[in-house]
Length: 268
Length: 288
Ligand SMILES: Nc1ncnc2c1ncn2[C@@H]1O[C@H](COP(=O)(O)OP(=O)(O)OP(=O)(O)O)[C@@H](O)[C@H]1O
Ligand SMILES: [Mg+2]
Image (cartoon, rainbow over all chains, first blue to last red):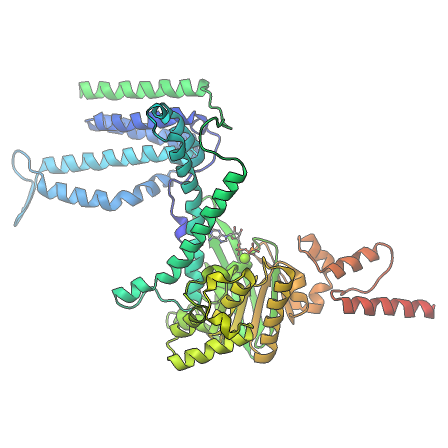
């Protein structure tokens, strides 16, 4: 079923990682991205991996979701690794030579490092969406971007659009599932025929889907207007984030992590 | 009478391997005879829709087997598409599946997929339209210009047009006004009586099935709570109420009277039976 895809799936919980201020979490997440690209030796990556792993354990998210987060980028990783292996050259003797294929030790080294770096990066960044509900996350984005309001950037509208889109993605997926099944029950065939018939086979799905999406959009707009929604001006927030001890602690831990990585960079 | 459907130890789990794993249908075994009108009732989330979608091969069961006319439909040699023409399924809120320019074309979608020629398709469309009370003028209109009740009837006609041996309807009357409800249910009842085909009608309200069903299947939390003749099922009115089902108004009335020591009898689920009960009571009193 389509519904099983995890688009940044959120797992509710009450761990320190869950309780952290979402703005701080977002910023640290971006900082993590930078640090992983600064890390230039295996020891640093190993420490980062251990750091991410312990965060998963603290937040109580099953380790198998690390693999799930890696799955979508697997094809990308495989293709780039293969290209890297064959195309990169290095100094000294190649360790493998067969016809036009030559592989250098350095190419293996670089590729392995790249794969490891991407794994740690994706696993770490996924933790953000695993432990933060989409609504809270867009709220954090809105708050962090709010200075842009002064240059007339529609921050609130953007955040509202994101919230609505995220709210309706599962609904639309569910709806697509249902329509596909309903048309299959009437003998629709999506698996056979040439390209044209196959494209045509999607009309019975697309038309009802669009009809209901527009209907929903219309109803939602009406419902929002009925509750006097008029954009971001003068709107107050339900959640008023406040930095707490846990945030200070998280910040210090992260600072420590950053310092360690920089030190390993210098000394190894 | 032959067996139309046999379910053996049928189970289905959703979202396997995630924290949201759920046993939607749990070891269901039962037999349904040809020509029977079975009412399937149960609370929201009791697994009714999941169960019926397994019967025509739309959802693969995690365990168990489905036999239609003695053939295991999940056998490799069996084409599920052919099964779907044999077992017609009308979905919950089926009006959301309409897509064609005209009502006629929409009803013709199923028969066309069966690979029939234009002549045969035309015959089937007109047959189904007649059953569902859709006139020629309506056939030419766009399905999106119809009222909710009319759209529902068009969607039903779209499945009936395939003339399935077994017709399964998932909440065909849900969300309609009382008049539309009665109309749709009456049309289905007439179809059952005239065609003699097997019909399964899913609903969470007993009131919908009580007048029509020969047998009733009650689902609770993915399991069969009971499956028996309509009479026998409704004699357990109190138990049904305990699992959160809405029993017919007249049954509730009879149960309420019981508290005041007025016993109309055990299986009161139509007004007619209640009247009979009252009459029995008064004649007994006279005798005393
Ligand atoms: N596609 C799905 N993915 C995950 N869980 C599902 C899915 N469809 C149904 N479920 C779950 O399976 C259980 C049974 O659902 P089902 O739709 O079969 O119930 P139902 O008896 O038809 O209810 P209703 O009367 O509301 O239609 C429910 O708990 C539901 O949440
Ligand atoms: Mg249902």
